[in-house]
Length: 305
Image (cartoon, rainbow, N blue to C red; front, side, top):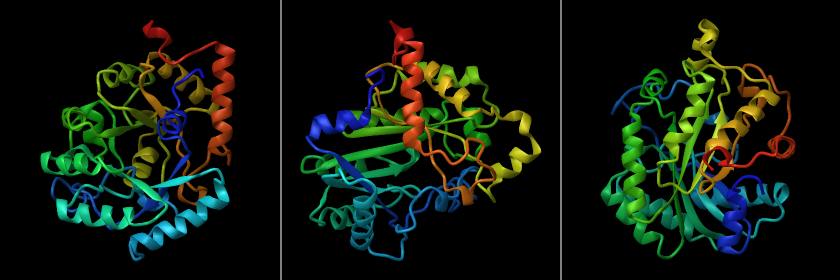
């Protein structure tokens, strides 16, 4: 394999294919409720990022049942499931609330672990202690939305924290021995191609296990859509072949110790202003990446050797 695949790592470590089932437990974010800001991240509409079966009016167990039903049709090779608390910031609550939602999810007979998507400013020592203890009896992973390594970008997208906050959170999580993943977004306003490539060196210093990368997609009705229409020159725009070559350039700078869980995102067409790459599915884009890496005789971390 020319890059470190997270799917392969998980299957090797746990001996079977694990599939995430998305759960909306009704959390919010500190840059939405006024704790550090209002309006949320400028690119964000959570309805565009998670499946229709996952809504907070349903119980966690019902969402898991419907999610498993969905995935048995789409991903028939799944053996066990991870409860994936995805929408908004899923550690933005007292420990008792986190214990409640995790316990309900883990009570399902087909669930063998929990994954919680969150922000680096929504974690503390008490929560890390709870997740560390929980990890002794099931799979536990925290997914931190870092999005950018540049403070100027984080300010512009109304993120509500700086990059040092992310560094502190992942270092603290590492000290507790908890599996963790980081999200990075490519194409945010004000960032050049070279700036994005330089982020690899910053990421290489973080004690994380895996990474999710995703290209910026302009979601209808967001503040980002207005900014894109008013200042299109501030955005890097890729054709699909250009993005694949860019990502290979990035991979060559990324330490092979990091597992790549995703390198593109897929938003339903009804949510985005346009679909410049057409209606191509992620699995086909992955095949294109693998073919292009073979053509270039490229490998993750090549430029570090």
